[in-house]
Image 1 (spheres, one colour):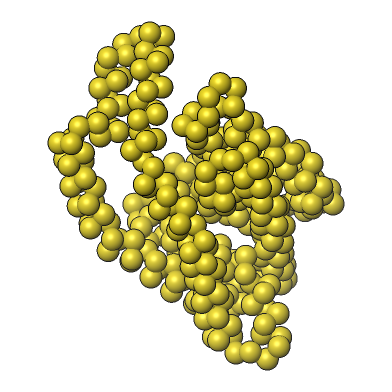
Image 2 (cartoon, helix red, strand yellow):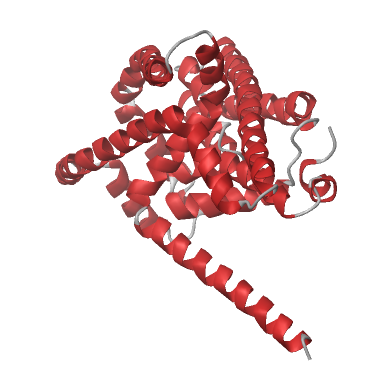
Length: 350
């Protein structure tokens, strides 16, 4: 007689969880201008949390540590921008010749493409072949930039404020959530899970940052020896885009193929892309598994689905937070079952 009541209670709980999750996702999607930079701030805070703890052990006030880390991040971004700026300026100056080369490539292969006339018109419109088209295209772009500036500034302020206050109060946040979710003996276990998730994500990103920096140096050096203009920029792009798994390397390979078309002829056209793919495959097949795979092994399909979902959900910011959010959730959800069983198919064995 009790089974129908138990079944109905289970169905009610599952339905409630599904409905609550749907409402939560809808709210996060609608208010993405607020929650996306806020989530990025939390992820950044989790990554830099061990460094903040070390600085606090030296006797520095927590507020000073949080502010110092934010200033340090800004100096790092500024130094990177200063390093890249000359190459970006050169690239902008070369845009007319790049457009000419692309248009020339389409003209050479127009006999192989059906319906090329319509495609050619669209390409010419996109590339701005006519002065009037270019003038008309520049005005909306400038207007769009003016309208987007306040939005970008607001998101930056949300990110900075979220990062500062998260670093300042993250221990209290963990304790509060653990006390609200857990009951009795579960509270210390939940708090331990939060600390474990924080440590795992921080170690993962420290290791992957070293790997990506090595990849960027290797790609930049190889392209410099090849004589490709802007090799330093391509190396930095290889480092940064490698944080966005699958899609980042694919985008960079396409860009290097275009760079080869613009700068070389014959088989040399494929040389920049081939160099990058060789470096990327070496990193993916040997370096990353050796340094990271023994400690964090996630199903590649799960990574891909998570990346696609967050890119669709929040765009570029979603692609940045996809992997750390997935790692945190997987680590926290080990609370729901036996960790020795649930962790094996996802994280593998150390």
